[in-house]
Each structure stands twice: as C-alpha cells, then as structure tokens.
Image 1 (cartoon, rainbow, N blue to C red):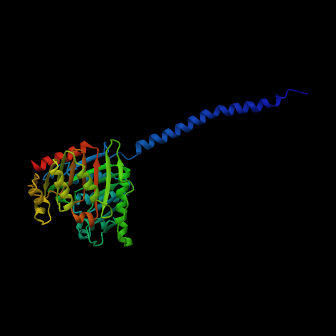
Image 2: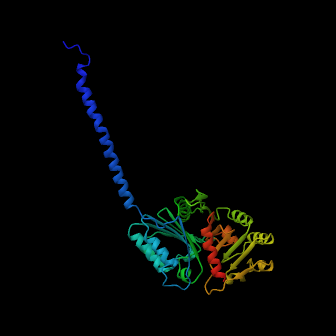
Image 3: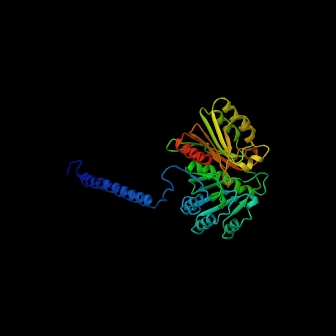
Length: 361
C-alpha cells in the first residue's frame, strides 16, 4: 500500500498549475480587446469644434463674401452637430441658417426651436415647421423671448448679441462667444427646456442654474444668469463697483438708472469709464447717455449706418459681461434673457476691447 500522503494530490496540483498559466494570457486578451475598443472610440468620436475651450467672434459689417461672417460661422457649427441642437432665437430670417438647421434635422439630429411670438410667422420659421422641426413661441408673454443662444450636442454654447438675421450678420455690430463646456451647456439646456415646456404646460419659466460658476481648463470662470428668474442686477452692480482701473461698455440700449449711477460713481472715484451708445436709442427719455455726458464721462454715439447692437461691459481688462441682456429694467424684470460674466481671461477681454477700439475710432 502506498503510504505517501501526497501521492494522490500530484495530478490535481499539475492541473491547478496549468490553469494559473492561462490567467496572464486571459488578462492580456481582455486588455487588448479594451484597447481596441478605446482606439475605435477615439477615432470615431465627434471632432471638437474648437481647439480652445472658447472662441469670440464679431460681425464683419458689409463683408457678405467673408468666410468669417457670423452667419457662415454658425452654419459651419450647425453642420458639425451630431446629436442635438436646441436654439432659443428671438428672430430667425437668415435663409442659410434655416437651411443648416433643416440639413441637421434631415441627417437625424434632434432640432428644437423657441422663438419670440412676434416672429413666429417669419418665412424661415415656417420652413422649419414644414419639415417637422418643432418650433414654439413664448405665447405672447408680457416680455420678450429675447435670447440668442444655441446649444449644440449638449456641449457647445453659442450666445451673444447676434440675432440670426441678414442684418445681424452683415449690417449691425454684434458679438458671439462659443464655449466648449458640458456644464455651461447644461445650464442653457435647462433654460431652453423650461421655455419649450412652458408653452405646453402653461407654466412660466423658472429654470434654476445648476452650475452658477463654471471653470474652464485655462482658468476662465463663467457665471450664468437668466432673467427674469435670476437676480441679474446685483451681480452687475457688484462687478461695476469692483472696478479698480477701467470700465468700457458698448450698448444698444442703456436705460437702467442703478447701473448708470454705479458707473458715474466709479468715474467720480477716478476710474476710467467710457462707452459707446447706439445713436438711435438715445432719443429714449430714459437713456443714460445724456446724464453720463452731463457728468463728464467720455461717452460717444455710434456712427455706423447699421445698429451698434452689442450689450457688453469690460472691467479692468479681464472681466467681460455679455449676452442678450440690454442694460434696462425690461431685460431685468420682463424679458427672457441670458447674461454671462466671464472672469480671469485677459484674452477674451482683449478681443472685446479691440472691438471697442474699432467702433470708437
């Protein structure tokens, strides 16, 4: 009789040893498959629209053939959309933009539009509806649906003063900032959804800003506000009162007394405060143009044949305030508007200051 207690264990031990030898090969195979999927995803994923996290554009007045017009830039961006386009547009009469939205719809992109009730019967809006793109208006709200923003693929936000019209691109002075940020896009998507659903539910927009402060990779900080739901005047006054060196503004309509008072106070404190007004808007008895002139501020009237349609304030050469928001009580209390305060980015501020210099030269 074999008395070796280990004699019957030898075959099992050999099998276990062979099984363990397979484990590294299985792990290598799993890793190779994972790497293959990763490479395929990387190659096939949508290409970024911008190399940087942001880009700033200005209208090229009269340059209809320019490839850099706001209209052509927007058409290009819409042509790159792969999933979804949510657009809140006060006015849309630019045929190439409507064409780009229809083309996106036809290739399977989910396109939705919110517009101002006064403009719902525009021919380009009717074309969108004819192909099945859902379009709603603000149902004759007391204020205006004054937004000019587009969210592309839940990632890119296009916003500023530019109405998607021929005049907006080729006759009027306008600005757009395009920002690559999923968090900022979420803020604007929520605002869009509230507006879109408000017509269906009969309830007013009350979107809350999920990411009030968005930080980009280059250190840029972006603060998002939507009126009339948000308190917009307090942050505006805070930024003006914080100015230590300079305030430059370009404004289509400036009738808000508190903002005018704040700028006059900073001017009296020795801050360099200067601005340019759209001439046609200064006939308004509430315009801040005359009070500022009387207080000695170096403010001027725009001389271009089109509208000076900007709604911009640049503070200390590093903070930019922009969006659809005119500096008025209506923008604060009645209209649906968006306002961005962009901080810690001297490059963006420099772009807007260059536009200021071009307009005021």
